[in-house]
Length: 169
Image (cartoon, rainbow, N blue to C red):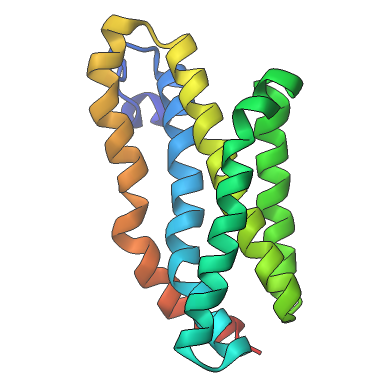
């Protein structure tokens, strides 16, 4: 009964469960990304000591991550969407574990994994959305999707800065 009052009858013309499922495909990865946006540079600064070294690290890992992003269409054709989504989820978890090791090489590998993981989740979510949401409903659903993906960016960076001292070594 409570669930019926919290969820609207439809989300942009989609049934509530389907609408919430699609919105969660964009909300949760954006939440992880928004929180890590502030935590990771602080962790890199802790490991490297200077802002210049952090910039170099981010530039190098960004180049490696770009190559990983370009491989996603190949992976989708080869493995299928479901497996690439699962691979992205596992890569996000593995990246988080690598960050916890507090070793520079592991941190750099974690940055690459994190970037590729977010790209996997985002691209596959877009593919699922385009396949399962009718074109007429997509016009109404898109603003809700954008809001769902943008909402974590309101509090995520702040939450990352606030919680970072509690997890620092």
